[in-house]
Length: 394
Image (cartoon, rainbow, N blue to C red; front, side, top):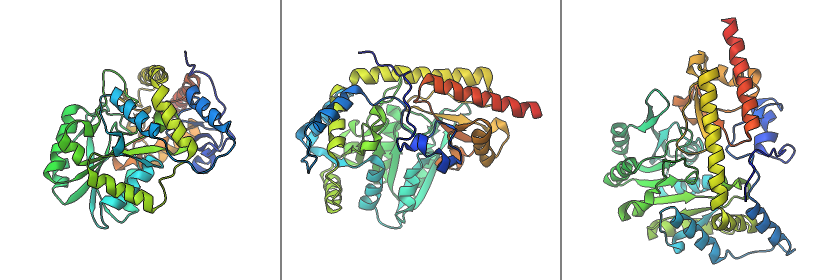
């Protein structure tokens, strides 16, 4: 089957956060929304069909999660190079909740938790909201938008009493897919300082060749024993609204603690439709994902080429993974507040202000390119016209 990602889907008036929440978030309802990280593409037909089939049975009572939920997940990961034990999978109602659970389970108030900034802002919230101490190790921008880990600073921070490192792999928002050497260095340092790795790998399927996502816990038994890994079909298959994800660990102590916490909080049930969607995605999703990646990669390349040709004041590079692009707006000579106001009032687009990901991002914005090319073209044309207007005034 050939999937048509150019097909426009009207998401307005569906209680869609991305499209219907612009007024509350940005003060206007006429913006092109390229912010919150879901896709404007139809959820795949094989998932919709599985959900419809279940609805033919008109009782939606309590459900037991089937073994196929776990085996489908294990098979999906095996196809991607990670052999896991299905019995070591634990359900969680989403990855952001799981990160918060992990902070609560595996650390104590006052403990130091490390993140690499700029990074997905719920990492910071999970630390701060649980009365832990947030420790930041800034990624290094080579100057052309390629980010690396400052391992000297990373080790220094680990050595100052950090107990947990929350890793984003692939990285949101800078788009890095960490190499084997980088992951090994992270693991070796965390082992050296006995730091638990909480690894958010929600974007692991969304990687562009020749880059390859390597699951951290797949590298060695030692690393697997020091880590808790989170994955979900939500980004890959556009089912974030179904709140279904999995937590994995080969460490029986960590796994037991997580399961006990989930059960005590009565959070293990999930939903009928979340379970069905995950199983359908991980059973039938290969061809759809292959076509999706080609479309997303073409959108990324379009943005890179368009900015270079028409808006050289705004710089970016093609991400190695994710459908999020990190735009450097520093040459506009605006403050972070002015950049945000410019994007909304002059360009008519809703993007995430870079400062929400850390101070390093204050002169950046995050652009979600998982939309129809026509919408992306309109947004960039708007942005070009807005930049040309301010340039004409100078």
